[in-house]
Image (cartoon, rainbow, N blue to C red; front, side, top):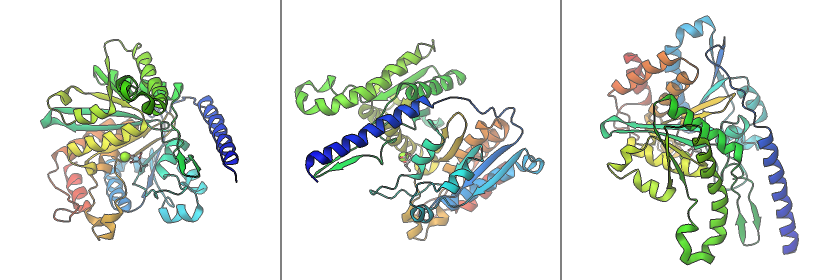
Length: 390
Ligand code: IPM
Ligand code: MG
């Protein structure tokens, strides 16, 4: 094929992407599930890969104990969903096999163990696919360290940015191109979610983190930076502009801008970091910085995560499937705290605030430690200890 032919094909692929993205934003509706009145709530449990089955089993035990009466009465149903394993996904050649997705869509909320994402190739991450298929646009990640006066809530946009087309880039001889997408309604809804959260929780400060300034700050390398900076400027520029537009509806909440690079430094800077409350970010920056924030809290194994849309919501640990732990035969020592925290977020989301509070209190009181080198308690022993405190 000639290079011109390659370029034409790439342009055709790009045109298709643009059409699809416009179609996507046309279909963003916004009818919310009301869990305060819903007669029956179905919680789907997905084990995932690697350490997923180990930690998910423990979180399920905890949920079953907390919700025993409601499960007996039928107002809560816990449903195990099979088949979202790397083996089955590779065999079907799909990030989420069709029958698994159909099962998932019969549930209201999901508790999901980490799933393995193959590097390179065409196979999309099951997480990214699920966030897209269920339109789970708000990724909420709390990091709370009372003794350090830290109480952060990250609102990461979850359906756009580099992620939405991350498996749809184009390759030409000697070159690869990926795309980053930021849309008006997509940004507006994550900004609203963050500001609504701030208002409900008496938070007075929202920080927007982007890299929209790269052109402004880099005048001396103008030519080298412009191309990239222009792209950043459009997407991140839109993100921050719309966040400020939405902020106008929330008087009393201060909004300020930071750039992602300095923000990663600021999370380590005392006492400055104590002033951050709600942090609002595009997808990729949110991915990166929440791992850093979780590490400050004690490790990625300590952080839970909610992926919330209008109709569905999915709750998970923020970390991956840790295949190396399984290879070393240490799977039983995976820390289930992350996904048990996610289970508490799930309870709150379905308006079971009392059960959520009981669980959070038990976790705060639990002194049992789990270490990935196997020198402390197992996942099951940790869950036993938490359950004893309920
Ligand atoms: C996360 C994870 C995922 C992401 C992976 C598993 C696709 O790192 O939830 O932060 O990058 O979003
Ligand atoms: Mg991540």
